[in-house]
Image 1 (cartoon, rainbow, N blue to C red):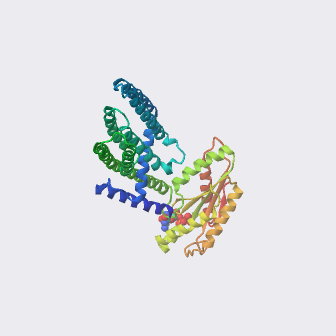
Image 2: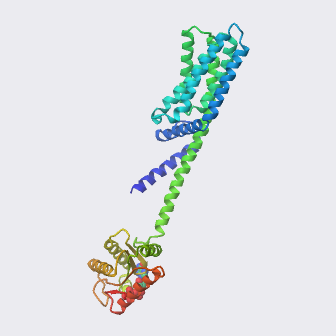
Length: 411
Ligand SMILES: Nc1nc2c(ncn2[C@@H]2O[C@H](COP(=O)(O)OP(=O)(O)OP(=O)(O)O)[C@@H](O)[C@H]2O)c(=O)[nH]1
């Protein structure tokens, strides 16, 4: 029940994804459940990137810091040198702090819940602070230089923030506006047109690139989801085929193949533990005349009823009732001695008698009866399970020869 429901759910998800892929609208938002999965996928990739590039990012930051300070020191007009150095130092410290925050996101507690907030704060913060920094230098040359860095950093931020485009855009544009407000409120170097132009350009390029990447990512994400769902479907089919290959189609009991595998395994276990193992063979009496009289479908129904009765009689998890072929059944009873197996055989005979299936052509009763052969042994390393099965089989022949409708125990 559960499996068919989840199977139905999976099939509808497969259809949904296939139609999304065919519709060529992958860059649109998915429906909520899929969108959640996509956002998690983007986040996981960014966090892997952040983890994998931890040391290289720290080294690059330190190299940039040293080069930046050296450049300001070397190329500053002496009049502005101290102010320029102070601005650069401020910028490096604040950006360094934000970078440390970004790199620590994968290790922060509760990051699942607050990831979007963390990532928006650090992405927007990095862009906004740099933007603000581009007005901080007393010497305009450095402000212009930093504004080029802002364009570069903004574009990179759109690529690595680990957010979908719309979230990065909100964070970065809000940060730029806040930075402009801060610049204006402090009366710093400001050409509003220039700031808006390069801030706008940086974000426009970032949004475009991020949008193109996101469209491709959405397709890749859908394909990976489809693959996972199809693999799940194949696994389920394989499990069903495996189950069917071990089941008798008519009675639903284990089939001969399953019995052969199980008896070999249980024989080995019984040998190791030095426990007795028992087998009951069971053959429906006068079944050919039954078929001839009542027809094959009625004969099939009898086999199904007998199978159900046998399955209901054996109780332990390791017991196995199987259809051996035709109108023959076999029951495997691990950790059972001859007396115990005989008692179970009697219960089976009683259960089949209780079915009270009329059989007008039986020479021994007016209902369906069975002949049973019971054998049990404690295996030794040089014995084989075929001997036990043969013994039970011979006992069935003996039961038939002795008049049917009885249980014979192997000597
Ligand atoms: N309806 C039905 N009959 C089957 C099936 N498999 C085997 N049989 C029939 O079972 C009958 C077995 O006949 P026999 O081996 O002579 O055994 P019997 O008539 O029960 O005679 P005894 O075992 O000596 O009592 C044959 O007629 C088979 O066709 C099955 O799946 N369905």
